[in-house]
Image (cartoon, rainbow, N blue to C red; front, side, top):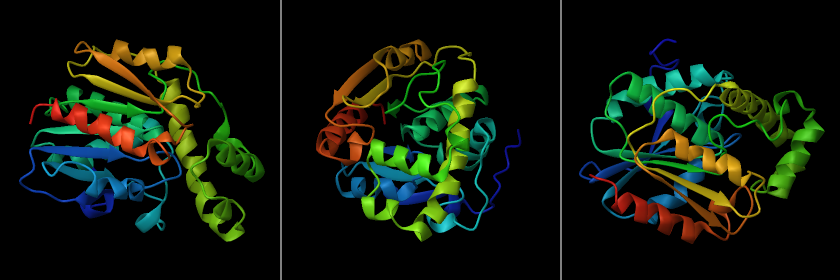
Length: 258
């Protein structure tokens, strides 16, 4: 895979939600399927002042609607890694939710393979570990009605969005592309040496990710892992548990070397 990003502008790929050049630590966030960097906007005022917050923005959403979506997991990892490499010159951690966790893990693997500075911690949220089977195989080929009903069941998408055809025309193609990326993650064999960084796993009590699949994350690290459960479904981190999630993330970041 090429290590040249498909867009020459790093500004298109990376959103500085809380730019703090003198911060002790960077937190680089990866968005879930169908969403964008804007998902993490509320974190900017809630994270400690010594943490700089950046969010990855894949093409095909928010300010990048005019760009073609990525659909291949390995290519998405390679392109994101290429863009992030200049930002890995200082202590940092990765956080990703759902598809974002899949990408955060893949990019961490790419970082290790290329000898770049490793993140001080990998935080993965609402995501089964490597080697797990997809809970909903073939979603990238589902009908519009099936995708809308799936979004409704998962929560996190306002009902007024799900009933607006014009909005759905914008959202559903991106969602299908993202689900193709997710399918690629599940198809990847869980290979590679264990990472020598701690892995924090967060999940919703009412989500459908099996406990055994959350436990798979422990095999990815030689530096220890933990699993925390929160009230809520798949989008527990933006619902009633947001404060508890931010407290857990802040605690883990405080324990991450800067």
